[in-house]
Image 1: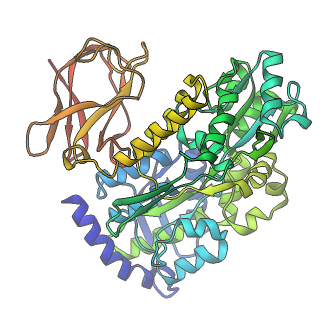
Image 2 (image 1 turned 135 degrees about the vertical axis):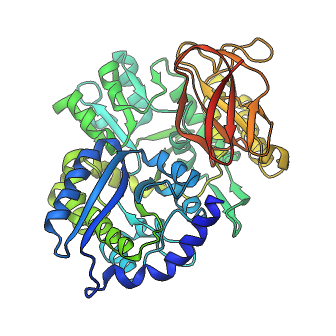
Image 3 (image 1 turned 180 degrees about the vertical axis):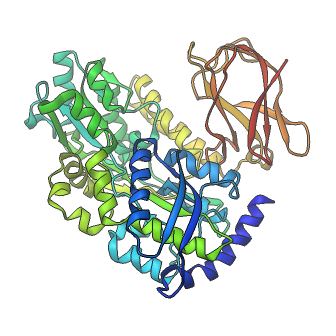
Length: 512
């Protein structure tokens, strides 16, 4: 019901929001109570920026703003769970755009607001905020959601950074780690396949349901990618991580993004080097590693009050304008989407953003991808590592293709069922034991749930759980619908069932 009301409200707002948003003769003076979700690292800065807006705007608008730290990854799930209870303004990753529009969680921008977006921002990020029919539903916030190479110049000479094999050799000789996520994140792992020209392109129908995929990972070019990946994952100094903090733990190279710039600079100082991703060699041919690229967006929840909606649009334009984007760049090295900010000398001189720009010819925009793909693809790294010969590599790719194909033959019973998936802080398993008294591995296998009432689901048995166990409940073996937004964390050890209410999105534990 809440989703239906949100969709209805979104349709109404799409027709009404344009009129008051920019009309100079509309009196917007007054105080507005609002909730705003931003990433934790910019929460304090955002509070200050809102105070500056309150002091500087000429229309007498005062926002009594509650700024809450909610990650871009979690904001969409929270909004879709309950649009009415969600933030008035929230930030999210571009890959969440379609489902937020479908859920009625984003107010469509009016003509002048849309002009503000298109005139002031890079074309690629404008496209990320635009539906197939040309409607704009969000304000671009960054243009830096990609990854590249950080390296310790005291270990890896500059002349080696173009070669994957040379970097691996430098790390092995120095007994230092090369951190590149190959077993836990398909987002990074895909770089080898994109480097050889492989694609995974998904098509949805008008309801947002995935109906087909063009995927070439299991191909001669995919086998080349697997051979290149094998060189990395077989190294005893490969580290399955994408955290810049690994430089403090014995790493000499880390593949991550601009969000880690401050951390890496703080650890390495003048020894910090940055570059686009290297090339790898197979059968005498070089292949430059590819990557995903994306951006962050700022959305406005549909409002009942047109005047509040208009005021919120003015605030969103301020927060995504040149000055505020430059403040985020200076504080956290976030890459601007604003064209004037991108052209500034400071941004142009930033090594991390320069490396991201150098990587851009080899990157592809992250579009809409089936939520199960991330789990299916991330297994390739472990399968490649375990392969003993070329036939083993081919089998790894065939296993991947078979799992992709199964998504389109999934029964409704599986597609609409809820399951539990998670980890444990104290062992390698989710819970200590499963039905067969065997430990399950981290985030790798779903625990079935049974529908016990009109809206409630429950695991079929209770498990002994230690404090610190984390999990989510998800639908259809996919991350498209997963709750809660932040992992559920068991606070007190005990024997519990997991209970989920699909109407409210509430996850809870029930003692045995």
